Image (cartoon, rainbow, N blue to C red; front, top):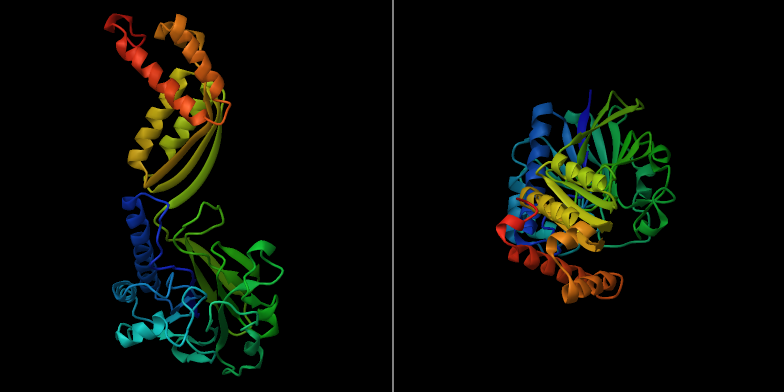
Length: 376
């Protein structure tokens, strides 16, 4: 039974400027590692081909070294690779693809789908109909030619394109690279492999977006997978299964803190996450000094363990309890300062007030005799 892998949006060479430098390097490196995993699976499963539906590279300007590293990452699978130009790496007259060819970096088993013409793979029992982007954006449906294309009757008809299926994806993300809904049926395709939407999505029985195999956004959309596609023969249904290949798991949390149990739950959640987490955490609500210190300690531990953790404290107010004030021995002028800082947490300088209150509380505790410390 013909079997192939469908993947897309590798974005090799992507930069992560919003992250600390060591995290940015690791996240960029993970994209190469993910490609190596795909190659390993293709070899292990002995698939007939691997189809990459556009945006192999993140930009035309990636370095020669990045180009060579990408093609080196394919080495574990010696079968056919079919790479389609997308909007990030369109097949311009002078492009990342023409540079790769000049560098002689493209292995013999890699097919660059630079033109809209049928590529027959009789050993794989299918013919590929590609719709490469030859410019970054187009308002014309480049898959129109599929319907009139002749392919051998005994071979599967597999389409591959990069763009937005009209009327299927959210209107605000529809790209100027349109693909007609129902193209697979209209063009008698046995399968249409799509890229551009970075999440996993089934459009119809024969049309899928594989999503990016290495998650790079805080969206729960099924990214981080590769699709294994099996089709018994022309006209037979496609069996599609998703397999996780991504290195890092991106999550975005908003946690409401009001009670000690909320803090317990948040800490337990952090402890349950794998070391490969990339977490963006927003805390809101209020807590006393003891609760804040517990949260800070837990987040400090998680920051050292996770690939990346960004915590946003601006919506979390520090409200010292009566016990906090007693333990800090804040009376007279200091008590008035504490009260003013508490009130200012509701204003424009909330972050400064919260930080000042925390520093003051720490100084007061540090100045207490050892025997008076509430921790002793």
